[in-house]
Image 1 (cartoon, rainbow, N blue to C red):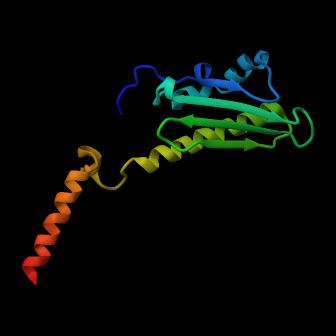
Image 2 (image 1 turned 180 degrees about the vertical axis):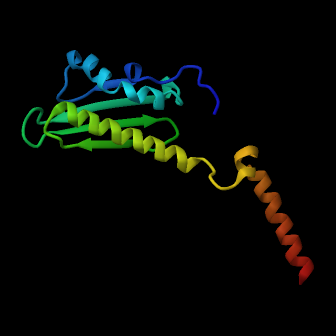
Image 3 (image 1 turned 90 degrees about the horizontal axis):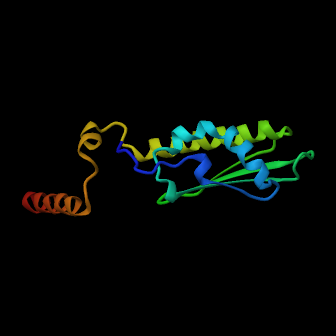
Length: 140
């Protein structure tokens, strides 16, 4: 993996949404600090996090953590834990799992040649298709 010149951190990328105030932001950043290691693979200017809570401190509260990373699908995690700290940790841990899952889906797993050489470009795929067409024509 190549090093990112300006790695994303929770402190740099987090916005607080509905149900939280700017005064809560530092406390939330502390709760999400373990995400920094996972986010470091992405550029800070291409990464956004937003946390919000509906019906804070009430029965049935719902914490939502959204993550936008350029070039990837938006990831949304939620928690309905009654304790706010537990709900934040639940959403954070789910986001970390989903980021890890997304990363492993993009990496070639069983083909050592692709892992070392990279995936073929569109022109290389076209050349391979042309070679197959020639082989078919020769056997007919």
